[in-house]
Image 1 (cartoon, one colour):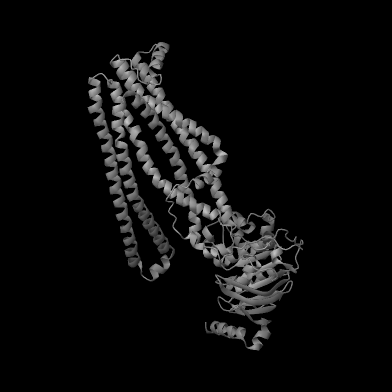
Image 2 (cartoon, rainbow, N blue to C red; image 1 turned 60 degrees about the horizontal axis):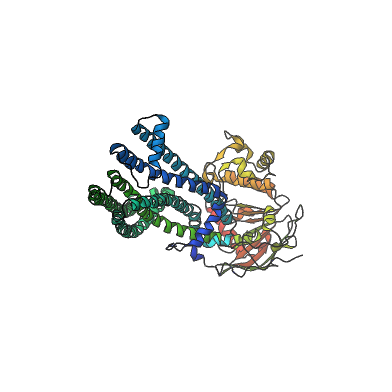
Amino acid sequence: MSSPTPLPAVTPATRDYSAFDAELTGAALNMKLLRRLMRWMKPYRITFAASAVLILIMSALQVLMPIVISLVVIDGLFLGHQSERPDFGMQEFHAWMTSLTGLPPLLAACAIYALLQLGWAFTGHWHRMTLITSVINGLRDLRLDLFRHLETRPFSFYDRVAVGRVMTRVTNDIEALYELLRGVGTLVGEFVPFFVALTVMLAMSVELTLMLLLALPIMGGVTWLFRRATSQLFRLVRMTLSALNQNMHENLAGLQVVQLSVREEHNLERYDRINRENRDHEMRSARLETLYGAFTDSMAHIAIGVVIWYGGGEVIQSQLSIGEMILFTQFIGMLFNPIVVLGEQTNILFRAMASGERIFQALDWDEKIHEPQNPVTLPARLQGEIEFRNVHFAYHNIPVLKGISLTVRPGEKLAIVGPTGSGKSTLIRLLSRFYDFEDGIIFLDGVDLNHIHTRDLRRRIGVVLQDFHIFSGTIYENIALGSPDITRERAEAAARTVNVHGFISALPKGYDTPLSERGQNLSQGQRQLLAFARVLAADPEILILDEATASIDTETELLIQDALRKLTAGRTSILIAHRLQTIQEANRILVIEDGYVKELGNRQELLGSDGLYATLYRLQFQETAAE
């Protein structure tokens, strides 16, 4: 039998999990990150290329429309002046259109302008659609890969990393990348007309163009200062908004406690304080945005004034035509808009860099359960013998299990009891290989668990927890869990066996009844019976019940106890319970305290030894009698 590959040198104890709690700034353009992101965009490179072609066409049409108005209509038709400036063939095209259609020259010019306008709108629409389609598809693939990766991280990872932090990477951070990639397309769409318009303007009047270009550094400087000021404000807005959402969720989730303790006014004051902070930050941001908008509008109007003042002088001196001067005023927007858009995209870029760092930090997190290179092939049916051999285990370097040795015989019902935190649940987590551990300490039918692939092992172990998880979907889907082996007939047979078929059949849609979030439209007992049906349908050789009969009424408990007898028949069963009356039929009882085996034997033996079990037994049954 081959040995599994040695465990990696990096262990949970040596990993820096605080990286998931750190606030990354994304303060610089990370080209390596962008190149890596392009890996998910590569399958859609054809649509990206189509988007690039469309944006070039759209930008050309955007420049041609004011040329038609200024050079063809105003100079050519109204003033009878044939311009010698670069017009990209618009005057010749107008003459050809007039000759071809027989339309009056002005109407022909209007037709050309309408065609350019329609072409600009059409290419702009398809540019945006092809770009957004490519980005959405690429990020869908990235989100899927990220979900697949996070779904396979071990329990040791989620013991140390908050689930909310992980979810942020799959939701908010992916959305930030979408804004970035879409914004890049917008930015390109602004800069192409900028350079084309600049070329035309320089050909008409170098002096006037240079005068207008002097405004660009001023625009850029003010834009940089504005974005620097608002970036801090936007961060505060997001923080206070997050605090508002968290406070709202906390109060609505605990609404029963809030009302019972008459905390409504206290909670309202706290919410109002956070709400005021959010309002203040939003107002400061709005004031800055309004001021910046007034500045950019003023710069555009000043630029128009410069064109009229200086350009008008050149018109008088016959250095410029009236149409050419008007064309300058129409090009001002193309000259200034890229600076404004660049400022907007800078904040998006930095946020996206931080989001990209977080996403790839999660994707690069290589912590996983160790799998053997040559796993043992398990037989069609296991006998179900389990051996724990001097098991030691620690969470966060705090010892939990301290030399546990135990053999569970095939078909035996073993109950495990002990104080909270004694290590009961840790034993079953190790048996299910949720954590890595040393070779040679846990065996299944004589085979080292580290020599069995976790996928094969977990198919042979059925676990029923006190907090039975309901997935969105129907009752049948929650029993089968997507397994092709569990047919509708097999699911119904399992439900009949564990006394839940009658309740399901009474529902309007039976097994096709959709379940609400976490099964809130079921009682605790119904959820527990449904959990038994799920396990029985999977037909595992090993059964683990972790507090599976807690928090239920007496009538339902009788149904569950009957279901348990059927469920555990012919299976090796491990029952973890605080309520000792639920383990009356156990063959043996293991008592754990502080990670050590304190007692092991049947019920009569442990009561007779007058040890920890006898003490727990007397305490619980005295409480029951008192009730």
